[in-house]
Length: 562
Image (cartoon, rainbow, N blue to C red):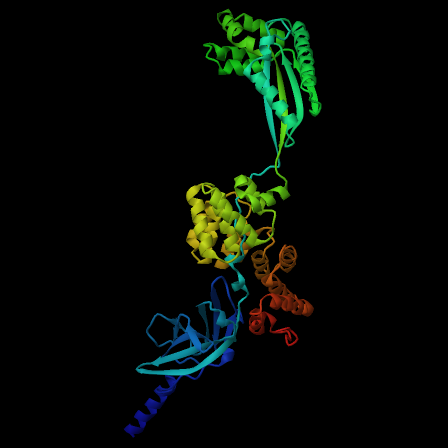
């Protein structure tokens, strides 16, 4: 009778404890949901969240479970961080699942992306402990594949910064000479026509007249009277000085047989108060601040002159040092220097590149769209002008475009050493760091490139590669590049992405592939197929990629030209 009682008690206890030796049942796949499903690349990683909804009376009170998510692909598998949860009777720190009510468990998943992961399966492995017993439950598949669209982001597609040339086909030069007059006089003295300044001006005008590469654009005469004396007298005096100067110049041009000189203009200023103030401010007159104060207090010319004359202590200095300099006519010749034509510059590069200035050589490179020819020009420029950072920077740009990143970095570094404060080499060095995913150095270099037009594109590419889509979209702005369109696709701004892709000047295989993805996301089958065909024509490797790309999972690609 006692034995029967013991057996009964044991049986009751076993029921209460859900069985002394009962094992946890296998987990069913429908207990789990994955977000997102399929998985998606974000930056360089594949993050996801697995949510487990444990049903009532499933999870044993004395069970501890370690769940390990595995991504299985291409004959290998990679584990994400394991996650623990436990029953009510277990002493531990893991999340508790109630036997009667069940519960929900959230399991974070993270993998470093590899291209082979596009075709993959996400499994959960279960290791169970019940007291001293340990056993493994069957693994459960919870998701298929990885959408790798974000991985298309490529620093090699970013636009490096060209250091611009300063070539100007027409450069305007101005030459001037002053004819000084005696007080209250308007006649031109012979000695004023023989000054070095006047002789040099005549020489420049004559040289321009005889040189086909120079053209006299305009000759101007400005005549002045000093601001002492009556205004009406000074007006007539300044006007007469203008007339006499123009008469002299007319005769001189006729004598030198100069007929092509653009326009001859002339004007006079009765009292040169502006010139007076500048000369006083630059002088060493002791009371100059007082004189300038008087000028600011009185606007009427005659009142000004009266007040300044009242400053008897300094007026003699003004009469001796300042006023004589304000009695003059200034002749100014505006001469255009006409540089080499495009054809001449290209010819010189072939026949005699050393005859070209550094800016002419840099400009020469802009006359072709052939990257190899640009590279040849910039290489020659760096040989002829090794002290100009632009030659090495721009040579590096052509190497970057060609995919020779090591050579590009070497030349960007040379440019930076020559001109450490210049922005273009800094931005370009940032791009080379971005290629190696050295985001810290890239960010620092981009910080040194403030003000450049394509800095937004560079930083946008960095944000895109790091998985910050919203920051990337903002940084790209209206840039028409593959990376900018990719950011907009990831942000689901499909209309903007379509406009961006349409605006790319030289579309490549990636451009067409992105258009195909855009077609898939907007359910446009013809857009998918036509653009995939174009992409594969330019890059045969995209055929295999498209075949396993889940962006196209809902489309029959059997007609694509593989």
